[in-house]
Length: 572
Image (tube, rainbow, N blue to C red):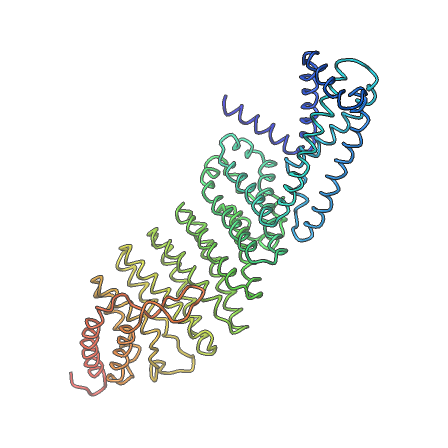
């Protein structure tokens, strides 16, 4: 019974919302009529006293006549002043803030005040027809219109104009759109609303409303030029997606048809190129997230072209936050979508970096990608961990390949490697299966194993990369501190295998020099970056350096002995 009452209440409120302006007009008319009735019931002695008091101030004229004489001009002047101010302010502001007129025409405060002035003006016009009739009902109505309603309208005029001026401020428009959208999303988990979502027409309406809010924010992003509102819009798009993720399980439970893409949003400008993916989005229930991610991706690409590094980084951060919420709610389909979107951001960054010889965007993006992978690791989902680390390994190796021709990418190899190292440490901290750790460590150690197709012996003449090896040795120091000797040995074996053609003493000196660099390195770098001044080549496990050096020497001797036995004609 209660659900039925809520259902019909929602139906009624939806009808009111559809015809909002007409509903408010009728409410104001009934309000004025009700006030007329209430004032008409006042004792005659009160009304007489009020008019006698006014008569003393106006040289013997009847107060009702004076009220009728000046009130029409006052009402019409006020109406013209308010409407004129609104037309000028809204027209000018809408040039830099699109959708402002649409928002204003649906603003309840504005509609109530404008209709209040209009109805009171019409109310006064009818009173003029009966100004000569000396009846209590007309005298009390004139008293109400002239000495109560008019002063109220005049006193509210300035606050209302100030309200409209604040309303046109970009930050307030953004907040208004976001607030309405979040309210709309949260309402989707109302059980009474699930009955509405059984109807395809209602589903199409709600889907359109959700998309329209994102489109409004995206349009604002194109118009605003200051960084603060741009950052606010990016955050609001992300917040909408995160909120939607939290209510999605209830929608999926009670209204699964909501995730079927309606024709109304199928023609959305962001979806026209994704027609082939509609069935996949319906299967994974990710149409709304895909819409938001598409907007973030387009924004990221545009901000890179405009050299807005910090805002581009914010797009990657907000995508990571959406991924964090998806992990918390165990939405595996969405997690895979976020992974694909991060891969797309890296692809944008690689293309932009190669074209402009700029590594900064990739440097920022991989940090947020690694943070998202850390959330996956903490969920201990082995399938997604392997999948995300596979993607990370692909892009690390691609960056390494580009670094052989593009000097700007050389540092990125170490930055990507450091993030991969951070993922491996996270795996160990969460006590994941040792087989999984070894498999991913194997991918990590193959970063510098790329060779050119014409090389017959790719290992011969290979140079020792102190930066990359320093990060690998730092990881080995961590494993030694955590008593993971087998993982540390895997790193040493990789170093020895990759440099088997290198003179052993030279290799030993190179490794020891790298260890000493780690020993001397502090936690802070002497220059600042977008991610602070943390030193990538710093290790918190310096006390394990001597242990590592001893282990390396022992394994170097064993490896050298094994290599001699493999040579033709060597004694067994």
